[in-house]
Length: 126
Image (cartoon, rainbow, N blue to C red; front, side, top):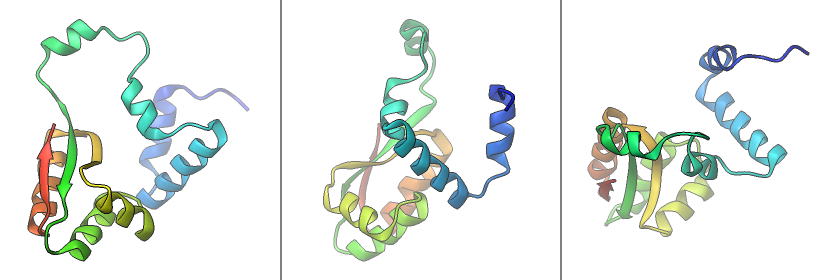
């Protein structure tokens, strides 16, 4: 099999549905015994930390502080925003404060925050 370039991989991922991409991420995590969160935290290899600190922040973490009164509605929103199953979404909500999305674009993070707050959750962006 020929080695694919990064651009070819990105184009292939664009063709996948969210569910297919979620299944790929799970299989990737199992195959290489890593988690996507660990890869996101590690960041790109060889990057310059000083240059990133000077730029305006363009990625945000959506942190669920508490579920509030409507826990079931918050669990439904967490499932809609992520590819988590019911049990995983419930565990995430129960473990608050916890990151729902990590490294999201500003617009996506603000939209997710609004959806979770509408469901009754307390949310912060970092």
